[in-house]
Structure formats: structure tokens, C-alpha cells
Amino acid sequence: MSEDTCNLRVGDSGKEVKLPVYSGTLGPKVVDIRKLYGQTGTFTFDPGFLATASCESKITFIDGEKGVLLYRGYPIDQLAQHSSHLEVCYLLMYGELPTAGQFAEFRSNITRHTMVHEGLKNFYNGFRRDAHPMATMVGVVGALSAFYHDSLDIHNPEHREISAHRLIAKMPTIAAWSYKYSLGQPFLYPDNKLGYAENFLRMMFGVPAEDYEVNPVVARALDRIFILHADHEQNASTSTVRLAGSSGANPFACISAGIGTLWGPAHGGANEAVLKMLGEIGSVKNIEACIRRSEDPKDPFRLMGFGHRVYKSYDPRAKIIRESCHEVLAELGVNDPLLDVAMALEEKALNEDYFISRQLYPNVDFYSGIILKAIGIPTNMFTVIFALGRTVGWVSHWMEMIKEPDTVIGRPRQLYTGATNRDYKPIAKRR
Image 1 (cartoon, rainbow, N blue to C red):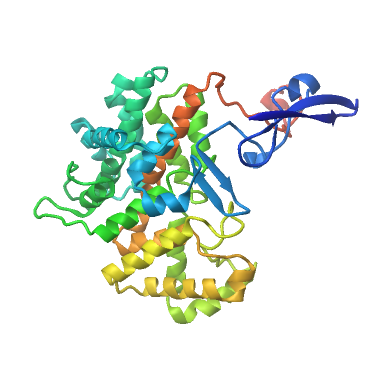
Image 2 (tube, one colour):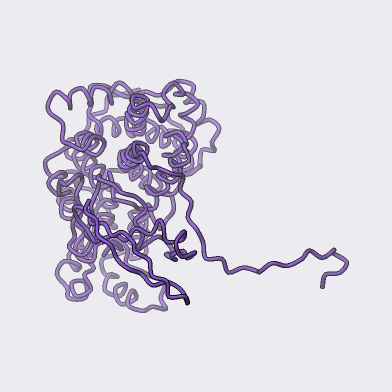
């Protein structure tokens, strides 16, 4: 990280201050304003922190203008094409791709931690059967600290690593059991002979009365979804995990906070919104009329799953997930009118000027929503799948933050616009 300086003139006094300017390995320069208040008595105002670097990180880089997403320097399309989710987990956590020996040990550690404490099963009985699975996830993941308090010393590197492994390993079990509980079906224990995605699919859709055979095409598509959602820089849920972690909270509480943030429809509900939109369109013959409706700012109908807030061109994750989407649909031969609508809409988006001129290309949420529906995952579980994949990103950022020697508790400031100082009046004298 190289350093330069800039001069800034602040306030009526015209006082000039010199602030450090840092250049990372990639991305725009950053002005260090930590001493601005001390030198000038002035804060910056940046709602949503959209122009503020809240931390220094070596994990993920995004260039939205060019459509670039790198995990530890590796392009996302290469990882999704050639790697596996567990290998990506190792990369995000430790900074390098593993050797064969390192990966075998890591995979063994994750596999041995997939079971959860038997007492944790009783937590599910406290929820209503119709509870949203994300509500269950927030509660159960937060409760892990009550069962695994042998590794909660956040200043102990071994404890941090064990907790990280436990979270990555147990999340598929907790997620699948949330679904099983809503159906009233018995929980299935993990099967250590299966891979990460395969194990999750079996715990989701298998029953004790018969064997469950995992479809390799479906498993590979789900593994790619996990990879593509593993991290996305300082988004709302990751920032929440870091902020919670800055207080010294245990990792299970921090990840539970991240899950709660992801639950917000503006963050993790995009692929669910795609299915809702397809339902509103209803039929292929209605697509043209719905496109016209989306052009009217007074009409509440919106095209979901096209374009991206961060990526101003093509979502780099979409090309790979599109390939998996078509593989799954061809493999399963699902007869679903909504999937017909989705494919017809995709055809228009990739070939018609309305979409191309506005750069409204299908994004990762468009395709992942279609895949999840095709393999039988209900829409209220979509965000749970997102959380499952994102767990390693949250954990990696938490571990990175804890190791920083100058980490301080997060404390954003505010622009106060409320009442000025005033005196209390007894109720009889108020009007």
C-alpha cells in the first residue's frame, strides 16, 4: 500500500490540512480522514458509506465498471469453472489455493464438523412450523455459542480457526433441518461419504425410509451457486459481521447478525424477487406487455434479475451460472410455465436493443433463482442458500479483522438535525 498526501481546505477559517492518500494494489485511491475531526472539528457525511472505505482487506476485489470480481486475485469465472466450493473456502480463509495435502486435511476437518450437538435439535421445536427459514437460521446459528463455548476465545488463533470450520461445516445441516422442520419430516444426519453440495441436497430432499441418489449435474450447479455467492466485498451483511466483530462478539453471534442483515429484501432477496416477477408475468405471451410496463415509472412492476447495482456492465458471475442453469434444465426436463417465461425473457434480454442499450443483462440472481426452483427448493429457502454460500466470506472477513492489530470498535458518526438544547416543562404547562 503506497502513500501520498492531499491538501484540504475546511470551514470558514480556510484552515488547510494535509491528509494521507493511499493506493491499494487495485482500485481507486483512498483519502485517510481519521484525523480530520481532530484537526478541523469537521466530520464527513456519507449516507450508506457508499464513498467510504470502512476497512483494509485482501480478500475480494470488485470493479463494477469493468465487470471484474476477484477472490484473492483469482477471477471468479476461473474459480467457478474449475474449482469447488470447499477449495474456494480454503482460498478465502487462508489467502492461497491449497496443495493436495492441505486440501485433504481441510476437507477432513470440515467433514468431521458437519454434525451438530443433539441438544440443538430441540431449538427447532420452539419455532412455529410456518416460521420463515431465515428466522430459524438467525436463532439457531446464534445459539451455537451456547453449545461450542470451548472455542470462543477470539484472541486465540486456534479457537478462531475451529469456530470458522464449525460454521462452514454446520451451516448446510442447520439450513437443511430448517426446511425439514417446516415440512414436519425427520432430520437427516450428514453423510461423510458425500461432498459439500451433495450432502446438503441429501439432507434437504432425502428421507430415512429410502436411499437418496444425488444428481451430479444438480450438485455441480449448487456448488457453483455457493462459489459465486461466497463473498462480495463490503456489502451490507459482511459489513454487519465486521461491525459486530469489532465489539469482540463471538463468531457465532457475528454470523447470526450477518444472516439477519442478508434476510432484508434489498440484500439477499433478489433471486426470490425474480420468481415473484416471473409469477406476475405468468405466461410467455405477456412478456412484451410487461416490458412496456417496466418503462413506466408510475407502474409498480419492475424487471428483477437484470442489471446490477455494483456491476455497470455484465455481471461476471452470470456467464458461468447461465451455463449451469441450462445444464440443469436440460438434465431435469422440468415442465414449468414460469421456467418457460424465464428462458423467453433471457432470449429477449440477450438480443433486443431495449435490454442491450440499457445494459440490462441477466445477473446471477436471475439464473440462480431459476436453478433453485428447477431443483425443487422453495422460494422461502432461497436466501438460506445465499447465507450458506456467503458464510465463508463472512468468516474470512471476521478472521481478517480480528487479526488486525489496530482494530477498534466501529462507531459511525452522524449529522444531527434534531432539536437544539431546550428545557423540560411540567405536563400542566405544555401546549
